[in-house]
Length: 253
Image 1 (spheres, rainbow, N blue to C red):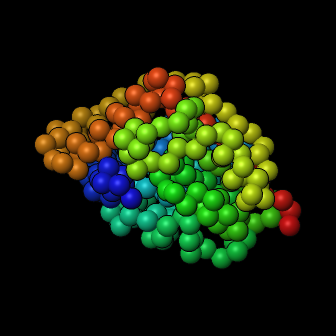
Image 2 (cartoon, helix red, strand yellow; image 1 turned 60 degrees about the horizontal axis):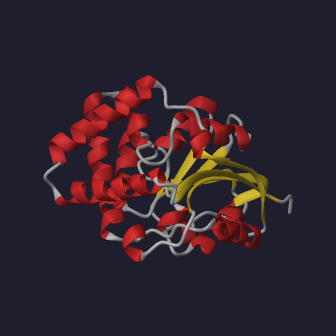
C-alpha cells in the first residue's frame, strides 16, 4: 500500500473516529463514509442488492465502517467488517462495535458461502490483487447472493504518477474480471447520475473536514491524504476517471 493510502486508511481513520466522537453520534455514519459512499449511492446499492432485515452483509475493506452502519440502520442488516489497516479496525470498533476482522480482501477470513451479501466500496482500485478480491467475495457469498461495488473506472491510460498507488481498471478489464469470477452483472450506474447529497449530510461532512484540518492540518499524514483525495477529485473532474456502482450476483450453485 502506498504512503498516501496508508495515511488515509490507517492514521487518518483513527483521527476521523475521534473527531466524530467529539462532535456526537449524529456524525458517526457521515464520518465513517468519508470517501466511500454517499446516501444516494448506498441506497441504490441496498435496493439493487435486495438487502433484507437480518441479512449478513460483509463489508470488505470497510475502513471506519460507515457504509455498513448505514445499511444496518436503514435496512436492519447484520454487518461483518473486514479491513486490513489496524487503525481503521480500531476506529470502526470505537464508532460502531460491529464484528471487525483485520485481513486483506484477497484472503478473507470468512467461510465459504457464509454471508448473504457483500460489498467493497472504493476498494478494488487500491489493490493489484483485483481478481483475487472478486474471487474471494464470490466464495464468501452464499449461492444466489449479491455483491455491490463502487469502482473508479479509468477512461484512458494513466501514468504511475497520476494513479500513485491506485490501480484504476478500464471498463473492459473490470467486466472481464467479473466474468472470470463467475459473477453476473445485474446493474451498473455512473455515480454522476446520482442525486446530490442531502444538505444536512454535506454540512456534517464539511464540519468533520474542518475539524480534522484544524487539528491535524500541519501533519504529514493529513497532507498526504488530502493530496490523494485532491488528485482523485481532479481526475474525476476531467473525466479521466468515472465512478461506477455495480450490482453483481452469484449463481445459485
